[in-house]
Image 1 (cartoon, rainbow, N blue to C red):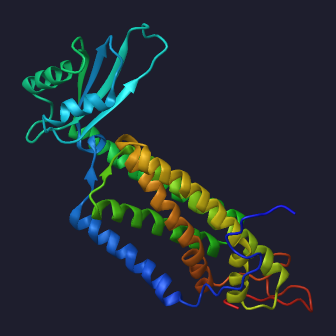
Image 2: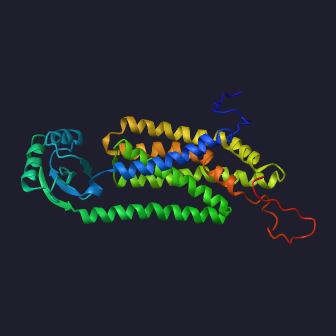
Length: 327
């Protein structure tokens, strides 16, 4: 017989509502605290949102991102992002990098003397390096990016809300959106609290979190709907506990294996993707938690229909029972 690793027993009977005042109440406190922290401390916006200068370099020597970054650290120009650019049209000996430097104090564009300092520093690493272009992203463009980022998150949440409403019931939709708001707001609050760089890659991470979190929530809701039709007289709280217990093994396996991969990227991935990976890492933990302790608590308080196979009209066929509410 083969040996299998089991994170949880095949059958569990954990009461996930036992500490509801602590878990659900703590989530509400965390959301409020995150909003206050973000409003008071603000986010540590990266170049995408603060504006800055983008320099495109060209050299016959291979781009060493680490060496480039080390050469520029001594200039103390704040947030600097360096990426290597690949294009099939490049010559075999053509190596291109894109360097983004945040806007300096009191300046919208990098001053000519600062551009010269950057080039001199890079020439110590690659003597033949040249600047193919120098472009500036001003505050107006940065403000538009912030608005677009907010709209993208809101649009994603609205689409998810509509999907859940159509697939299940409006109570499930409210529960799902409540858990998504919890995940996004708390993640943003953590970024504000620890002054982690917040840029467009972080927005991409937040959208990824929305998809991952709703996937966990839909799995629980789908099993809950099946059990509501199967156990028509069981109290709603007990049906919810049963549904979460039945999906617990799948939830832990999916989240656990994903977190292992993300932990490796967080440790060995480098500075370029660290904020992106950290956001997803935290978001998956919060998403798993909210699917169990936030979404279903909201549904429990709202109450749901207990039998999808029968109409909800109280004037239905004689002898038909209808049960609704909190069980």
